[in-house]
Length: 439
Image 1 (cartoon, rainbow, N blue to C red):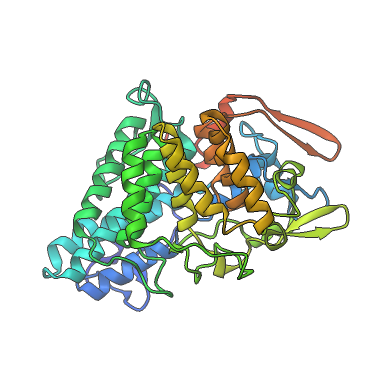
Image 2: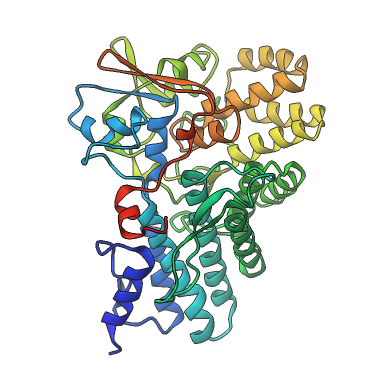
């Protein structure tokens, strides 16, 4: 057997910690150096498996929930909730910077080694394409957590995150610019596009990237970059593979379940059970719903005295990274931004017909058809808030748009995130800065 210690050391160097999984400890391969297609598939499966649950933590920073001050888990979440980033309690849960680099490491192993060791085949192309897509997704999450939102005027100079594309003991892991990271995301995305050959993944392995998932991801990348026409092209490509919406008028199910017709990529646990138990639905989020006509309200929430608890989230069968609802709302937003209001309204109405009662839909049809561009933009943003409750979208939507003021109350004290507050960008975790002074 080859020298496993060497590979463990390389792994530690890449992620700058000693507590992460040894990538060679992968079942069903066991502790071996990957050589075959099946070996590398097992490595990438591990990369998917360790994709972190950081989207849950972003919900704490936005306007979706309020913490229960009597929760036993309060100490783990309080300082995130009150945006106390400079000197948090030592028990505060860290945003999972290191774990995202762990995913990148597994992806790098497949990208750099499988290409040399595995014979050419469609299966090899699919595998390496997935690895490129997964690496791009990890970098996309890193840059949207730990750097300023993309601004074409400042992206070349805005501080981003380090690039680690290969195993190199001599590399200094210094942050690249936001523009450089987005450029790498685009390069990986294009590589994936040239290699992926499975259009949609079947239920059970739909945590893996497919062509549909890649185009859905591409539409999100361009949406965040405000490249409206490119986002529209990508979303139309995704819809060509997957376009069905769950009709809540005929089927009362959570549309984000991995096994619904909407699921495109069911990878992330976006609202973990401990946080679900420790929180209530915010007053702002409840107020965003029409309780009489919005069919999502009783599916998403449960009355708990004078407050509401989340029914959504906290279950493995709700893993969701991309689904068709996002495609429709992205399409409506981009059409509106390119001044095709008629098509934007048609797209939006196609979506909301599946989310409201007949009476609610009829009323909204009248209202939407009367909207100008600004009003329509606001309504689409509100629909995203409602539809993607605790699915990990809201914080990023706030970052890329208004960066509005948010006030959180906890134990009788008010805490404020001001409009355009620098805390809309997370600092690197303290232990990461300690291990890498270049950050």
